[in-house]
Amino acid sequence: MTNHGVYVYAIIRTGRPLPADSTGVGNPPASLRVVRQGPVTAVVSDAPPQLRARRRDLLAHQDLLMHLADGGPVLPMRFGMVAPDEEAVRTQLEAAETRHIAALEHLDGGVEMNIKALPAQNGLTALVAEDKNIRRLREDVRRHPSYDATLRLGEAVAGALSRRAAEAGQRAVRELTPVARAVAAGPEVQGCALNVSFLVNRSDSDVFRTTAQRFADAHRERVELRIAGPLPCYSFVAAEGTPTPTGA
Image (tube, rainbow, N blue to C red):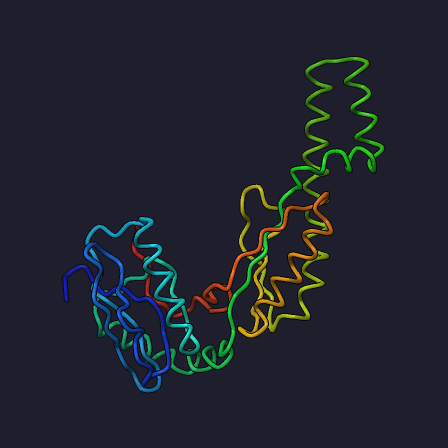
């Protein structure tokens, strides 16, 4: 083990084999190993020096989590989780054993699907047709062009497009919720009116995507719906008790 600490990828049930030929972050890629504590196990490697969120390492982290998920439930760690040593990892596993077991049971057979609702890029024509205030402001600009009038129109259009996207996104959430086992609001994302994740049975992920895409196609004048997944279940794992991230 290096003196840079122990990089923690995930927590799984004890006894599960690691995916064949999988490696970790770093250059060259780090060899994987496990730290066992009773019924739960952490998948770890040596932490590379000067860890940064490079594309190569982000992909290595994500790919490993997806391969682990193929074999059973996984509590994924965010990129950059580093513990001082294996003993610190083992201490954390023991302290949070009950929570980890419950979380693994909750996530068993599940994947995360995410939708982001953005203002429709081709929604201006529909907005003008439906919104009297926008039509009035646009007419003001035509009749009495000025910087202030143009600014008011631009702000009104941007706000209206964002509201329409948020409203359509909320309708999408209501339509998709019956397909999911759990729903979690995500952090604010610049340019997005809505960011929501769904815990979905792996066997239902195609149905979820088809339903979301059908909604997106039917409401393309109101919202651009971006659909991602299957993903590791980051949004449905409590952050309590996990190793502290580095300052990467």
